[in-house]
Amino acid sequence: MKQTNTTAELKKHNTRAVKTALLSLGAATKAELSQATGLSVVTCGTILNELTAAGEITEESQRISSGGRPAIAYQYNHEWGKSLCIYAYSDNEEKLLHFRVQDICGNIKQNGTFRERLISPEVIISNIRKILKKEADIKIIVIGVQGCVNNGIIEFSDIEELRGTNLAERIEHALKIPTVVENDMNTIALGYSKSNSNEKNVALLFFPKRNTPAGGFIVDGKILRGTSNLAGELSYYPFNFNKSSQTAAFSDIEYAMPIVNQLVTAAVVFLDPAQIVLTGGLASEMNEQAIVQHLRRHLDRLQLPRIIIKPNTESEYFAGLYNLAVEHLLEL
Image (cartoon, rainbow, N blue to C red; front, side, top):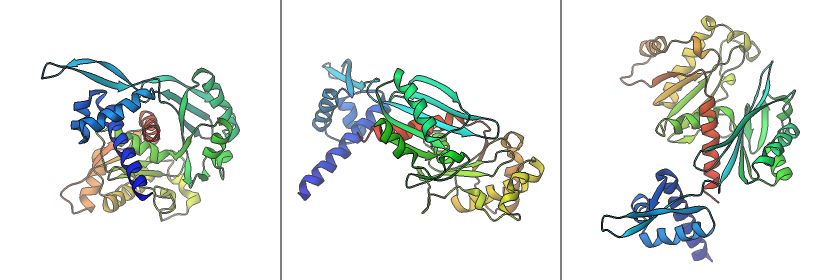
C-alpha cells in the first residue's frame, strides 16, 4: 500500500510538472516538455496521452524537428478549464461585485460588475447563477473579500453581511462548484508578483482614505499568512493613537505620511522585500523619492527595496484571483 501511495504521488507530481510547463510554454512537443520538466520523453508522452484523452489538452500541429521528422505539438484546450473570478468591494457609497470568466490560459470570456444594496452570501450566489447561465462549464470559483479569512471563515470584514460566514462552503453547497475565498490584500500581492516576472519578495501596503491600512506580503514566492491568517492586518500595529482614531489619521496625507513612513520602514526591516508597493486612495498623493530619502536617513543599508506607487490595483487583483484558480486547475 505504501508503494502504491508513493507511485500515485509521483504520478501526480509529474502530471502537474507537465501541465505547468505546457501552460507556461503555450505549445510544446514531447521533447520540449521533457527538457522543461526533466522527465523522460516516454513519461511526458504517457501523461500527454492521458490529458488528451480527457480533453484537457489538444494536438496543435505537426512541427519539423531538427532531425527532419515531424513532431506533434500540444497545447491547452482553452475551453477545458474555465474559472470565475470575483472580488467584492464595499465602502460607504458602493456595494460592487466585479467578475471575470477566464479560460485556463487567461483569456477573458466574460466580465462585468453587479451593483447591489448589500453583499451577502445569498446575493453573491444569485449573481453567480446569472453568470452560469452564459458560462456553464466553470470548474473553479475564486472570490476575493475585504477581511480576514481563517480556515474558511471570514472572521471580520468591511462587508458586514459576510462576517462570520464560510462563504466557500455556502457556494459549494448551493452550486456544487469548488470555491476558494481569499483575503483581498493577499490576492493583490500575489497578482502583482505574478505580473512582475514572478518577483518573489513583495510587500503591498494599502492606504485607503478615511479607513484603516492593510497589507499583503509575498515571501519567497508564497503568500505570508501567519499562524492565524492575520499577517497584513496593519490596523493592529501599535500606533500612538487607538484603533478607532485611524479613520481620521488616514484622511489627510500630511498627517498620514509619518505613519506611512513608519510602516514602510518596518516592512523593510522585518521582510527585506525587493519591492514595496503602495496603493489605495492616499497613494496618489505620495512621493516615491521622499519615502526613499526617509529610508536612507533611518536605515544603515546599502540596498533598499524599490518603492512603487500604484493607486489602482484592479488588474493585479484579477491576476491574483486567476493565479489562485490556475493552482486549483493544475491539481485536477
